[in-house]
Image 1: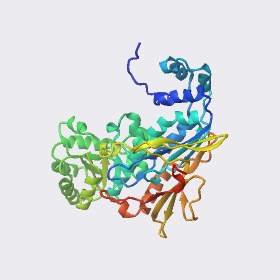
Image 2: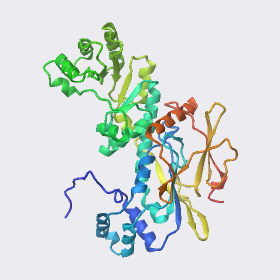
Image 3: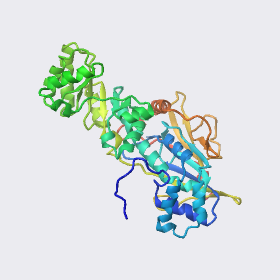
Image 4: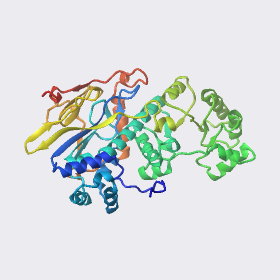
Length: 447
């Protein structure tokens, strides 16, 4: 009998994977394949109008690898699936004691990366390395996509704060939480999601909805009622009826009013008029927040036209990145290690070729610290000179952490610093130059 279809909040990470990861794992096990394998996660091609990405999601990847277990309930369910009908019982005994025992190399969160560069490298017994593919792709692809979009939006805002407002537009509650986290790495100053604030230590922001205004007999009554309850943090939403008239009403609250928000219509025209109204009332410190289907292009236009704005609230366009809603992140086998030695592995598929061998990414900076170019080499190949900075670091060895994890604030600072070091020609919202990434000749499939 089928289940009701309800989705429990507490789900099994070990089973939240593609079936073929587990069937391949069983196949490797049944065929006594125990060799060490190296897989690399990289983005094959950059999305439209992107010339860089902000790496994010590593913390969730690490937590998953360290905690991955198969419960008795998980194993019992696998045994009911037709593909596992003839699998030897010893495979399920193996799953009962499963632990990730391998290595994880990764670029730190907040690092700028480019097409073809490994963000993560896994080296582990082949069964372990295969099982973890789906989760790693899901968390790295999603958070890197959002962190990159956030960084573009924050850059367009030119110093004005950007708050992530997208939980209600995210592809599920967990996606909303992790999008808030990634947006913070990308430079957002806060989120509307209270649980994201609790879990990740992010500042939370909020106003009140149009429904609050509409439950009162008058707009002024709604404004006063809200301000009485939240005298130190009130931001009033002005566009339920007439935003200009609402601004005049808001001046009756006085200078203690923290802010006002405009969410629809001609934001540029309204913001100018509202600013004048507030200033004439002596409310020069009352901030104006703009929201409503904003993205980096609209924000850049608003800033360029001189609109008086202090904060932006961005939802759907941030957490879903509609102009480039997915990354072509892939997880590919590049090397096998056995008693006979290292065997390079690669694909020749048209349009999906891969390069063999475990890799390192190196970055060269100029005299002012600006990025000049990247180089991808074999992991045992020197960069050529001390000026080249290695990006991939060993985070997990023998199944355990090699040291403390970078915290979220540091990841955000890293992203900001790296963007400051990226020359402007690579950061244009449209028509950005392609950053130079060179691949060592020793990565050729013919070597």
